[in-house]
Each structure stands twice: as structure tokens, then as C-alpha cells.
Length: 176
Image 1: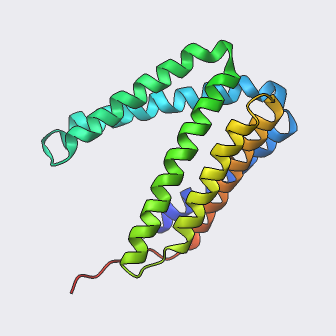
Image 2: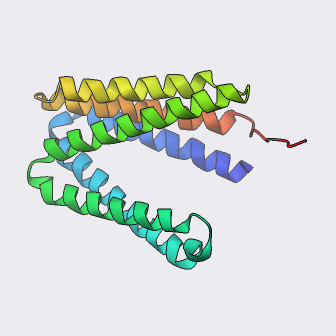
Image 3: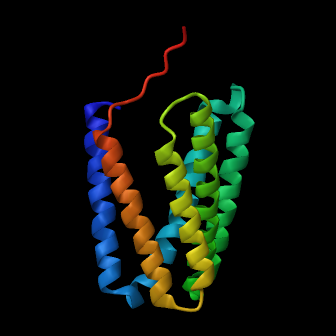
């Protein structure tokens, strides 16, 4: 990471913490805003991945998988936009899906890092935290305040990991 990227990552982490504090202070009015931001972020991610596919990865190995990811992200984002009338449902679906997927992926990366005798503990802990957040979403699906609190916890955790990664040295793998 360059110094500018580290500074940007630090600023994004601080902005995420500020949004988490704002949601904690006013959870009732934040439900619609969270659903809208999550839906639009998925749509924008899908559009960005689609543009990246069309401009760069169309002729690369593994480029077709990026096209599939872009289309799936666009579909899920559009599907979540339809459910803005009932924002709790879209937030719970997003939180469970995202946290479960990220948790399983982080644990798999941790196991792979352990095989290469690299730093693996943080990856496994990150995966376990995400799986715990997904389980908490399923357990407390009936309460709006708890769902927003779980979202805020995930937002604080992501902000802290982003800020911590801004201060960590970049790992370089040497092949001998």
C-alpha cells in the first residue's frame, strides 16, 4: 500500500465509525437509510465490476468469473431496492449473506495461510466474528433495534480492521 492509500484507508475507517455512531444514536430513522445505502452499494459495485470486465478482464484468464460476480451483485442490489418498503428484511438478508460468506472465506484463507506458515490467526478470528454476526442476525431477526445494533457492530469492526490495516506493513511473498 502506498502512503496515500494508507491515508485513504484510515479516513474511510474514520468515516465508517462516524456513520456507526450516527446509526447507534438514531436507529429507528436509520433503518431505511441503511437499506438504501446497502442496496445502492451493491448496484454500484456491480456496475463498477461490469465496467472493469468490459475494459480490462474480458480477455484475461478468469475474467468471465468477474462478469458473473458483476451480474449477481447487480441482481441482488436491484432485488434489495425492491424491498425498501420493508427495509428490515433487506438488511437482515444482506447481513446474514455477507457475514456468512465473508466468515467462511476468511476462515478458508486462514487455513491456507497456516499451511504456508504465514500469519493466520487474524484471518480465522475475522471469520469467526463474521459468522457470529450472521448467527446473531438470524437469532434476533424480530427486533429492529438489535438488527441495527448488529449492523453497527459490524461497521465498527470493519472500520477498526481498515484502520489497523492502514498501519500494518505490506506483506511481500518471495519465491525462491
